[in-house]
Figure 1 (cartoon, rainbow, N blue to C red):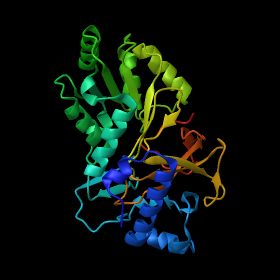
Figure 2 (cartoon, helix red, strand yellow; figure 1 turned 135 degrees about the vertical axis):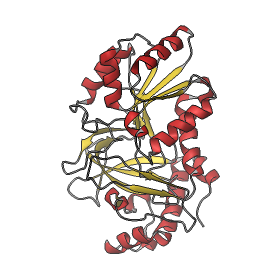
Figure 3 (spheres, rainbow, N blue to C red; figure 1 turned 90 degrees about the vertical axis):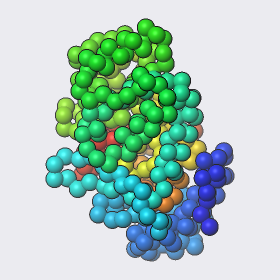
Length: 327
């Protein structure tokens, strides 16, 4: 029997996480045909998996061309990844979008407090210009949940955004500006502001629009442009229903139902520890109707306290819209 929302979103210990993760693994190993075939191909008997570290992680590439489903319910929404022309993109088929809503709402509250305390400004032009973006779905919901008439989306109307930011600062209103990286850079090239209280959250992504930058260089430019002391970041992707958040310095933390572990770059079935660089594996228990155990193409370090950092991508990885830059 698979866990319900209360069990997943009320996890409060490593023991509870491990127990729930193993329950979800057994459910998905049986219910998800693609995951079942992958596990069988490895010669692994799901009944022999007794710890989280033994769970096989499905390569994220399987979301390109396969229906990764652990539910027989009808799909409510399909999230698709961004990509350059001709690139094969990922599709995440979601049968119960309320899992996504509860995940990002609870995670935001955990890291930032009540969304109703904020004005939410979303500078996400490339995402607004296509269909199926999970980031747009989340941003729209946060804008709605803020219940603030000043909250809203911005495309390329940077002058209007600058005016709104000035109004927010004058009114001393807590403000979150969430933006795709290239658009934030475009904005600060046209408008220099000094709004120390502003939360600037970049979602990653140059999408071929600008030269790639290392994280330190990028954050320095944005800090100077917005007059803030740190740049916040979100680590999420189409194939997940949960996000990690960084409040600066590129160090991310996960909500209790999400965990990052790292694998050996030469042996994907072996894990690395103690902050060593490895491929990022994500356990996202909110992905209960899809696959909760995903091997990404990102490189990073996972630390003993549960935090992690993203260092870049494997050389043969596609450019992705929602991943952070090389650090």
